Length: 349
View 1: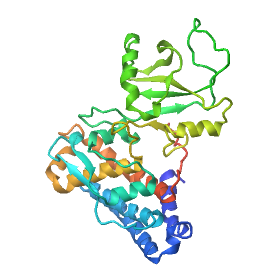
View 2 (view 1 turned 120 degrees about the horizontal axis):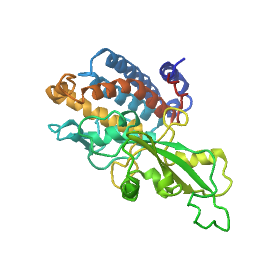
View 3 (view 1 turned 45 degrees about the vertical axis):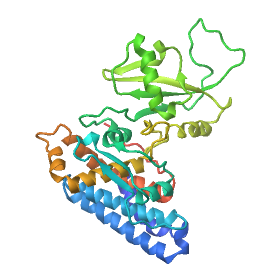
């Protein structure tokens, strides 16, 4: 059974399996809303598969809202219903990466953010920033992106005794353990004389790198994989010596949580100064809301953006909407369960 089929079956199973484990057990109103909302979510996604990219964002977004209502019915104490989006699209006449979305009062976005433990946003965020923060989209750019993308982090399951500081560096009197990880960057490898400046620019963009340092010298820690892709090795002082693998996993979960597949971790850029970005589920929510607004109220602009013979971003936009059909159900399932569901990575041939 592939991952997509597994998620689809699991979502249908949740229609009964969550009834006795959540707030649904105490309220007929919650149960009835839960069932109807998940049915609508399923049908909206089915409709999204049938229509073209010109209409698909509308089905995807409204399906996601119904899934959010089911999450709220299952998990939000007190008032759990909503009748507003809680969002507002801004400057929709601008180029697509520059169209923005911001919170607007209280509504579905705020309720589902709280229900799923996602940080709330406070300011306007551009489509370009959202796009680059979503792991599936960061490596497939649309024209005009200028913000930092999500990057892969490969965590080492074993501590190292100390960073590699070169032969001349004195060894500490007492061994100090460090936790290390490799970050993969899709860009040209900086020249040795430029690496300090590159780090000063790179580090503040990723909250997960707070407190980190190079694992050795700038010459040793940078490595080119191929033209346009390189790696950087970072490390952090271990909270204590002798940490077990599960403790190391927890350390990195707080910085770059596993995402959709076992051992797949991503550093996601901050979208607001000093704040952790919304979860991938709520980042997709913001993106699909904005796309749906463009499709509904700027149909000419949206159709022109999707014209593969004229728009350089058309293929990437189609890709994003195709990927959403696979990713959104997975993230909805995690939101319903309030837990990760990590799949085995498909084998690439």
